[in-house]
Image 1 (cartoon, helix red, strand yellow):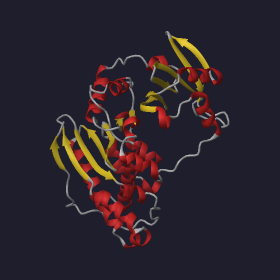
Image 2: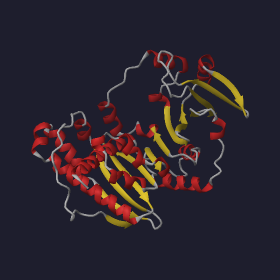
Image 3: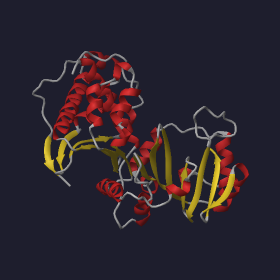
Image 4: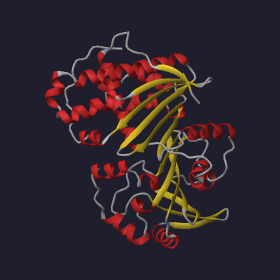
Length: 365
């Protein structure tokens, strides 16, 4: 791999860190019926599922650190009117949500199930005034515009959101016109079993993302990354994975992030582990370089080094599948460092030696 490809891989690692920052793990077993039933409602044909238990996240010390760090968005007039009309504030009233992405030809649609405190009468009245209301298969389905009244509708954007109440504290939403079909049980028992298996591995975390191979993450990365940040080798390896999970659990004032790529080929898993080990080595070397030392605030540099040096890469052999796992922690020091501008000059770093440490393989369920 040439120097440019290694730099691209390093940039990708930072991107995955940012994604992991917002996509954190949690799915419980039978003891938590709401979470179990929320995930069970996800279509088995989905290409990706994102789950967040906001009720639990709000109780963590890390959440307080995150809310203090993140910029507070300005409430525009349309959202302020929505709050008055519906009485629903997602920061206060949304407890958990599961969102599935589904490919429909060249388009992608979403389906979500949300739990929280909903004023059904106010929300129904709001939808009736600003959208439509009809009954299909005995279920009341509402539709509203997906674009605020004061905003122009852009070409190709979905024009409506369809939703229905599944209970006093639960709603289902989609941008597909066939909401009833998405609420029907899946006909693919095999697909449903595979999703349940991945969800079960993420037990104990309040937010997670699971991506299935259908989403072609490597190809998506290659097509969207700027020319100088493309890494064909990394993209090819990612496309060989059957599943990717990104999960994290708040522990005191920090967030433990676990990402895992799962495939059927041991060779691909070994190559991906070696590449990630090389990326970590290069990132540490780059932060220790003279140019970065001059450009980056010392405390920010220390925070990045702490995260990188504490990262662990391992290989997991589950028999039929082989996985690569990357674990790292995001601390208050990292959040503060994220405010600092990353240096624009990337130092010239040689590829890591062929004797770079390999990730250990282990048997793991």
